Length: 461
Length: 139
Image (cartoon, rainbow over all chains, first blue to last red):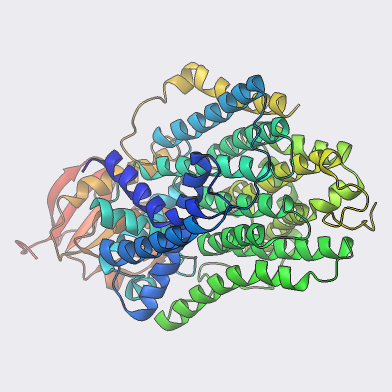
């Protein structure tokens, strides 16, 4: 099997394993690209959850033990959902033809940039060859999370406490294709970026007019593609994290009021994926849930607890599953090569601010950050800002979290900031772009007076 | 406005690929990190070439002049030399001479350092040398 065939097969089978999502009543009438992207994202999440469960039950990971149960569950769910009625969808009207063409051209250009940067190794991540790929190979060879290696004295560099979704995906690739094609792994990252685009557009359409949704999606694509290359993240876990976090943010900002079951499931599942992809995913999940709580308070909505629980329990369950596996396998619960918690040095403040500001270029001399921030500052007031509070909490909270994290650095934190800041702030950039787009749309999509489904009057308005 | 902003942001990558330096990048790399991290790419090339000279079930250790490079070589080798067991010479700069002393093979990134009299050269590959403890035909 050629390396390219392996790439297609690996992700194709994964999309089939998550294929039930394409028959979910909420997605069944959407375009094929949306359904395929949802299937790929769900398949990736389902694979990680299944792999953890199998590791706990002592079932070795093979192509059959991983693929067959997922395919069976997926087929069953697809059959069940295919028989249920499809709820009324939002108008299928697309953007005007010139806007659609320009937006699609820009998005394709952005994807081509990222794919080229991955293929030529301009935007490739060193961490792929230092530990992500190594973990994937070890997992595949051991038929599981390989606790003997990960808990070893000389495994600290593999970050054994990092969530398992990405190495599980690489192990799956190795098992299915027979080998890990190192040079093609970064190229697969462009698939995850590409999968995010139809989902973002589809979710934005719930709150935005089609032309606006197309424009925001195009900006998201160019900004994140340039930032991912600048942060040398092709082949890292960041593209997958971005996919999950962005879907969650967009679903939460565009959900109808009061939240129906399906939108919260979308965000909840996406947050579960984020939690299992990177530790920053857990931070993003906490910030987003906190942001939704804050928004509910600002909307003075009382019966929010149930909807909030519906959002929080799946990522919490995913995190607990990973915690249990670490406890059972004797893996460290914290990263052994990171600094001890709560031992901070405030002498770093100047260095952190200076070094961090140097890394806000995002491959576009800061334009990717400036546009959403300017839109939010100039055009958004009152109710429109309240609606996007969860994204604002994430957009501000993640850099704040990083700031506190860098205060823990032993010695000069500059190198740590160089390594991590451009990558870890990507979900914040994504959230701010989506927030700016949705907040701009709100005057047009604002509920009519007396509309019971609209958000209550805000304290800020 | 959004499309205009998107086009402006896209102008940065377009400018990159349209310049001669950008066009020069348009080739398949030999390693996953050729352009992103040339130093790590040279470590990769050495480890990949050295892997052919380390037999299955052997033990090996990695040596380099710079402790950071030595650590990088150790990490990269774990993904490329899957058939053998690594015994690091150092770990994040902490010397592990006793552990490394048990290794049958030594992958030396760069020129041979002194003190390897008990070893014989197996192969000189791109970026370094693979040596084996004398008196061992195979592991």
